[in-house]
Length: 225
Image (cartoon, rainbow, N blue to C red; front, top):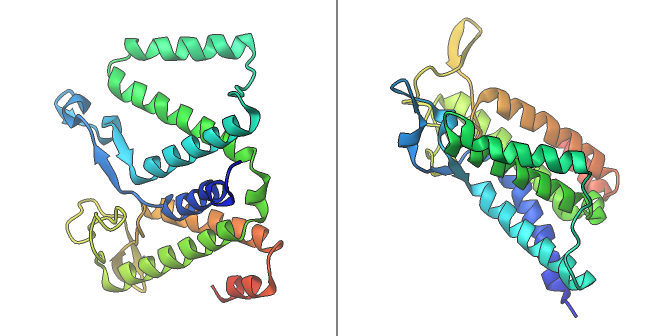
């Protein structure tokens, strides 16, 4: 019989993933394959993000638990049309100008689809205090870091700090005018100020929704933010 501790690990990893999702920390692979007409295109560079490692851990553990519970792998049923579409999509990767980047992007799509299906089958996530705590921790952390970046107009610790952009040396930095003064916009640990803003809004809405199932002090914490 599986221990309770083993069953809690995917939940804790999911909470860690929620906290790390805004992180832009990654490792590049084969950047020389991403040149187009002599120009390096960043979007064509295969990247392994810190969050990918957490996702792989979640996928592996939940899949293992499902196999142990059912005694055999339970594969989702796919319609023939979807099977043909997926097959064509996979084969087409070899016909594009940059097959490596295309194949890497396809793997990312499959990774996200697999993660979505497995997490959807975990109803305890909707009422988990760990998930709510991760949302609140991410909100407080990202908002605090953004305030620091905007106030000092500099980064806190650089890229190895969860992928924080170096505000001092980054070219074409997004800026806006505040009270007649042009200031650089904060990034948090995301890849762009717009991503930071979207993350804060989405996390806030999710935290408000989940807090309806939690204790009163959690709601007070939300009101204080």
